[in-house]
Length: 148
Image (cartoon, rainbow, N blue to C red; front, top):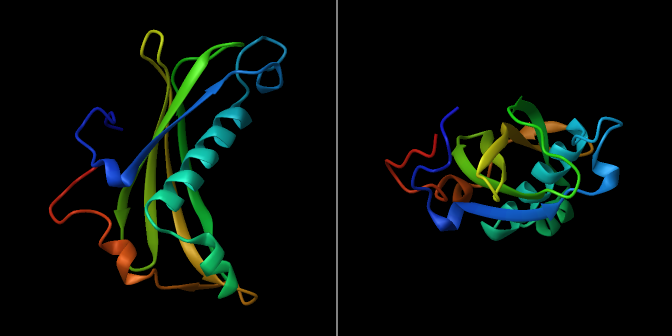
């Protein structure tokens, strides 16, 4: 997966920061895989809000985004008390799904800890039926722009 050091428009990207807490680590003192997923979920949720994916309005219409695929590469372990930044960006949008990409880094030395992608779909509840994404979501990515 390419690095997010490519030019990614600010309107479709977001960076979050955390400090590794004791409960984020395993008995070996390294960050547990679920902590990375939690940080990625937090970044994606905040990014979705930033780019106009109004979850409150969607839920009033009984529509929900669901993760249908998650790809993650663990590159370098973060440890207790590390400062961590998660950079997330919208990679692509089509009729029925959208992809987000993430990098989790330790800014003190630039070490890449995790690379990840998530594919989301929109479903109508209670039927759990996939539905088309709103047209305005497709327009979030500038024409002829690649974030991959």
